[in-house]
Image (cartoon, rainbow, N blue to C red; front, side, top):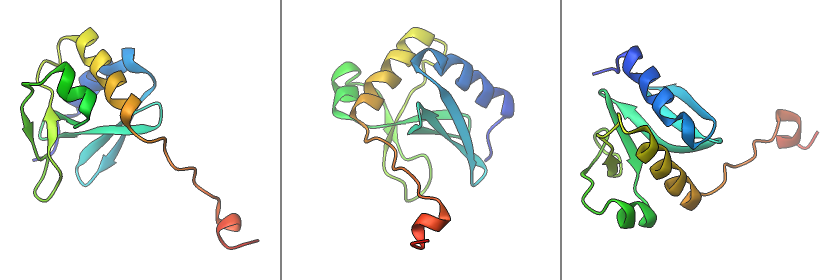
Length: 112
């Protein structure tokens, strides 16, 4: 089931305290990024956030599930109305995620 566009925009607005939030449409759902790091997915009108050790410490009882069949489990962040808690959780999660890879332009890829 695809996401409702109003729900997606609400998530983006609620996450904005964490940093620069962007979304990218992916297979009918959305990848969600903070400061260029993908930290989660918005699928079936739910926010899935990557599992990190810090996330387990901050919210140890947070439910987990796979956003789609075959995907790694993610936290399901259901308290999306709590903007401050959501932003802090995203910041903590992103602090453990690797920096995005720098993409080479085509001429660099081919040694031109």
